Image 1 (cartoon, one colour):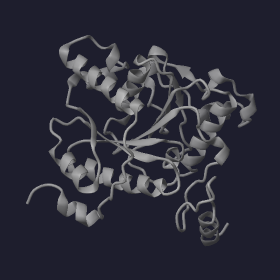
Image 2 (tube, one colour):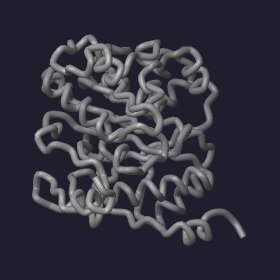
Image 3 (tube, helix red, strand yellow):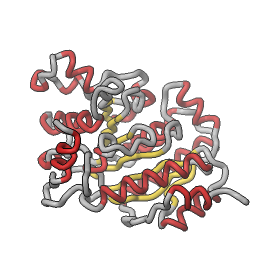
Length: 305
């Protein structure tokens, strides 16, 4: 289809509430029947390499420690979101579909859902080969499979761990399912610059979907002064702060979560912060409506003269 015609056609697409999904939108549109109604859903975003998978996995365990039934969905072709939970790289939904020549009805639950530490259920959505498709399709297919196998009916919390600082329609797809989006950032220019872009993407989705920003998690940062300045300027707040702790790095090398590490005071402090974050998210956070800065304004805002 001609790109201009395709763009126009997509711009006329509507959500289940008959609302237009952005002027000239070329984003992937989800089947309204595939909404997740029975669980609290969180999408974790942030700059590539900032620690989203570490944050997601330990947050999943923290929710499970509170007695919640948790499902974590990795949305990265690297399929490494859940390896600290399951101790190995699990096959992706795309891998499983390829094995049955994309006849989804032939898949069994155990082909794409794997149990991790403390009962956390793990799915790696994966993604198409580079340059060959849209990640939004993969997210949609994953949710469809989960619903067809009735796996969401027994789930209290769903966590989407989303690829890098990509804000295209494909990897904005989890926002169409989420109640709250959480941004992981460090106290530096590049991380906050990426966060500002993600804020803009989430704000755009929030016009037509129920997702709202829940707040910011500071990771790998001794201080939060630049994060705090940015949050105050745009209307965000800090949910949790995880300083630079070598045990966090070691947990990835040991292929385990922080809740499986020894009980040193340093590790216990991090575990307690994750438990506190899970309690706060479960209780509910105020929906935020931040106003992202233009790139040039943010460039001038950050740092020192």
